[in-house]
Image (cartoon, rainbow, N blue to C red; front, side, top):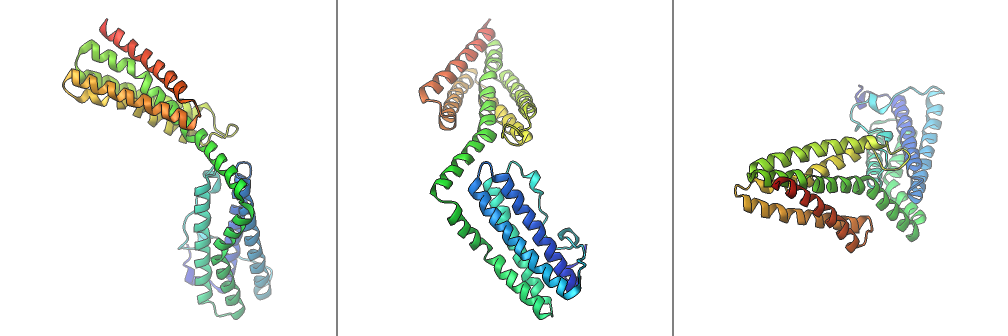
Length: 318
């Protein structure tokens, strides 16, 4: 990698052209990736892409006037000092906060590049252009705000907030809720069966720990392999699998931990209390994010939990 100070004026201009072209294409990718769910924000990034395109054309015109038609191939990865960027395709599905944060970091980095490049060049016309571009990059955030005011009117903001909420439910809440329900309910039977069969809390704890971790691994892989999210919009499969697996294990470990208490009666009482709390949390999530009526959610979750709980007690007591 080259040091920035070793670059000639021609190479600095070539690097600037490469940076503007890369930023332009990233903003185009942002706009394309957000267009279906967040059309107003996509319009903002389309406007920013056009600005970067204008910067690139001005840089090419000055390079042609100063050094001729050939533009050396110098990219950000060839010069020390630039921050590594994750490819946009690795960020999919695009999240609004992540995209806006990355755009802000891009603007800051490009502005600093122009300020440093302008400070070391001796050619008046090159320095003038670099100074102008630094000022424009500094105002890029303001330009984004102007575009936001123009494109993100009240109804558009409401629509985007609703779309963002739908994506959050699809990609995080649904797999997490499925895992929490499976872990909280399905592990009730083996844990309480072991407890009533042995009356030894530690044995019940080991059974519950094994069941929780095993269920977490199983549910995680099942969710990750169910679909790749490309058609359903449910997000990256391995992220869904991780969320589902962790919540499954958490749901089972919750009512398993009380069996670390040496006293069987105390451990059983604490475990039952935890189960009630877990079922209450599941009911709240179903009501809050899945829009299930509170009474209906409570009956569904409570009935399922009661049946599994009773199964564990019957088998363990037999």
